[in-house]
Image (cartoon, rainbow, N blue to C red; front, side, top):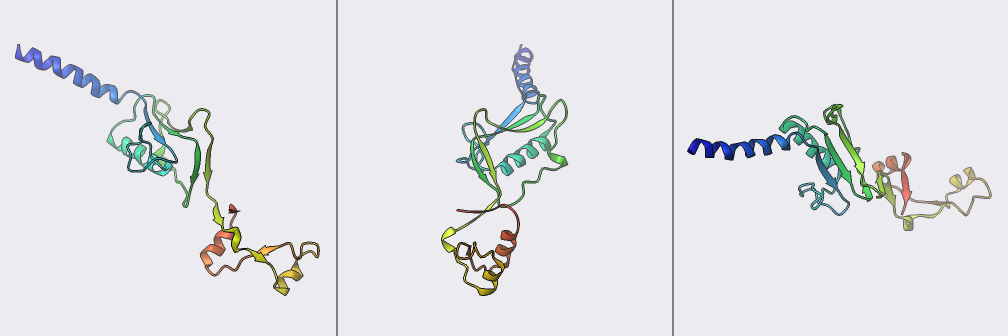
Length: 163
């Protein structure tokens, strides 16, 4: 009888373990999340990069679940200081896709711009700069002195915004 009892305990365990590897997995990201969280709906990650890393870890742990993995992104603004790189290792398969998706009815904004403090802008007074401007624009153009070359390069790129 002891062998039969062990078997009855083992069967549900094996079924549960195999079920975990056959159904789709989900991770959640929210602006008020924390990257130290588990990435669940109740305890979401704060960044898409952290969710990507969790997907990578899930893939390393074993085969992708049937149905794949979905990263649900809650509504809000997500600021990116660096590029979010998705590589070959981040791909799923036809039967087990990896999908990043906004939660239904929620507005997700990915913002890679760099804010500029508008109070630092002053009217342009430099004679050579004023000479390059259309006469109608003179007196209406603001400028800022930028000492940090990395900031100057960032401003020269697209995506700069005033805040």
